[in-house]
Length: 567
Image (cartoon, rainbow, N blue to C red):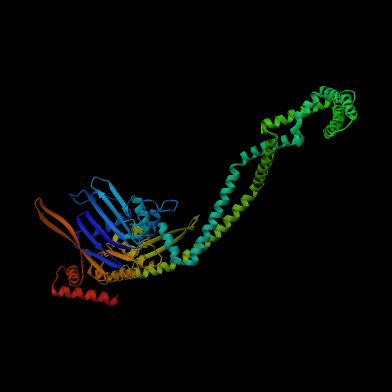
């Protein structure tokens, strides 16, 4: 909620402060005094376009400052970086968590500056953070109520929680259909590439499988060396066996054994040496036998050598392409098999994707139809509610319509929602933006705001020229509607020329134009002054008849009393 608004050098306003609160606040004053500048200031604070002509003549810059209490929900999100952790520049320790201060400076040079809680910000940030909290209804403003997206959202909210659940269900169905379509498109778009990859993988798998790799292939080089040098290996092993056999080294070892046996006596040392010699003799005999067996096992087989060399060539061909080692080839074969199976499954599933898309589309159409039915029911009740308010606001002959027409199915449903108005009998209903004058549109907006008070998001509602072309009892009804909005928990600010409307306000500010005589000639400035009690009666009297006679004051007091009684 807007707690305080401060203006400096904005148009004809030299300096003004409005202390605001909940309820209804009205701005009154003579035409041209600058009342609408307050509305302009609020538009600038929620991201409106600035114009250097708004800077007061002779000043370097215009400043608009405001304090929100409590702070809008978007302020904390704006302060926090993407990771959700407080930024070093966060003013949480300096700025109470339940308020936010925003300022916008418009320089005559054309440059502008925005700050939120003392931090530099952008105009876009103002729109994002504070835009949703303020709804301005003025003849030249771009109102949220005129946007088709907002009209659809408000109609859905008006329809109630069951309908909103149906909208959510449809959004899920739409997302599932979109996912099925994307899957089918992905499969279709990669069909040719997938076929090529399948062929390549099939060839590579077949090439590896044809060799039939086994663990023994790792020792092929050793086997080839053995076959290549078979004769030399056999003769060398045989010679070694003979060298330590009984006819060679064995004969000498026998002599050594016999010499120890002929010793006249034994000692501990000779006994230990005898044992060691026996071991050598036994080892020599075993080694000689093993060498002879190894020599006999060597087979000089030219056919086996040719086969081993051919096998090695095939294995080397695989390691060059899929290696460099045999384990790498085997790992590649496993990976290629998995990828081939995956692509083959995609190809097999391609025909089933059409059916999946069709099923998702049918489900989406069903959920969209449920949403449409809910909107049509809600449209009838909303029209009835708004029409009743329009009649009380001097637009008894106006016809308000909520059109729910077939459209493309999107995540929000299959409808185009449009709010339309025929301001006078015999006229065709048209979009709210073009169907009526500014004052009529403001009253339509008021009727909509009152009807939708429980479902709209804005905390601050601003009405400018809502009283255009009305008076008397209709003005009292407009004031009553504004007071109803304020009692619903909204903060309502209204610029008005009518005492019958102003009488309903919880607080009133008078905007006066003052001409000062200065050394360089006369200057004009505007003051914004709160009025209450007798001052307020005098202001209402001026608004009623242009004077403050006793009769005018009595009339003003009656109007105030009537509003107070009705409230």
